[in-house]
Amino acid sequence: MAEKLYLLLRKMGGGGDSISSQKLLGDHRRRRGKRCTQLLLLHTRTLLLILIYYMFSIGLTFYQKDLFKDFPFPLTVVIVHLNVKFLLSGAWRSCSSCCSGKDRVSLNWRIYCTKVLPAGAAAGLDIGLSQWSLEFITVTLYTMSKSTALLFILFFAILFKLEEMRWSIVVLVILIAGGLLMFTYKYTQFNLFGFTLVMTASLLSGLRWTLSQILMQKSELGLSHPVDLVYHVQPWMALSLLPLAAAMEGTGLAGSEVGFNFKDIEMAALMWCRVLLGAFIAFCMEISEYYVVSCTSSLTFSISGVAKEIATLTLAVYYYHEHLSLINKAGLLLCVLGIALHVFFKARQLRLETASLKGPTSPPGTGDAFVFPAEVAQPLLKDSFDQSDEEMEMFSR
Image (cartoon, helix red, strand yellow):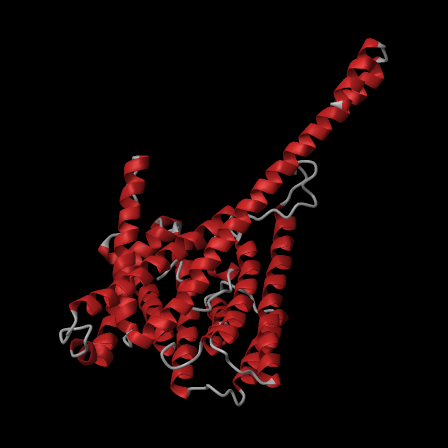
């Protein structure tokens, strides 16, 4: 108000140059205020999306852990989840087609069997073994062990020539592997079978995310949208797990009180409703995860993943009253440090790639901006490290 009055008085008193400068100053302040408002709304939206993703992601881990205490059939739970999410993704595609008037992508059987099958089989076994391991190990050990999936992702990315071998990768391997070794040293709740399951799942996770990236980068397949990939991959995932689930849990499930030998139909129905609720939470987590990356960047998602990793470990220690020795805590910090360094190295690499893509015709003021090239701003595996548990099944689960 004071600025407007001042400009009005100067206009009445003459001084054209001064008036022009004051107008420019006023316009600049208005633009600056509008820009600040836009930034505030942008950061508020980003924070809200990340918090929603945290709620579904961390909540799903603890929900599944508690569910397996009453329903000790993790492979069956995963198969139910896969079928529910296949139906939900199909409904999503149908609604999208009706609203946009455009048909979603559908693959022919040759491509479906030769291109999608490997990624689906690896993803199914990854998730199945991961959830099975939760029956034997703690959430803390599970989260720490699954963080090593980053090492296998880098290994397969180098093998398939998606990444170049760099000294930073050697540092990451030493930090994360050394941290896991220290964390499991004389760990009071260590279970060898469960640990073997989760480490095998981590290896499969590396293969699966690499194959998923290859699928999403093949523009001719049209699977760049995660919902389309989820829809096409789910059947192969379920089929890859079905023989293992039938062999390990078929007889036990059929003879249990929640199977054909039920005595209380209400109790059995309630238990299956809990299983279905987990599937719905998992689907909501995947969608929220997709929006975090699509509305911000994969680097922002990776940075927020470090905080999620720490939050999950902290809540697990507090909620389950786990005791960690000094060596275990040092290993935990070392592993988290390795993951954080991965984000740092990736940020530096993206900055270099951005600088190389900029030309002399770049708009003024963009020199200091952190602009993401289109190909590296996509939610692909090489820009995402957070493979800690079932809730990281955005693309392939």
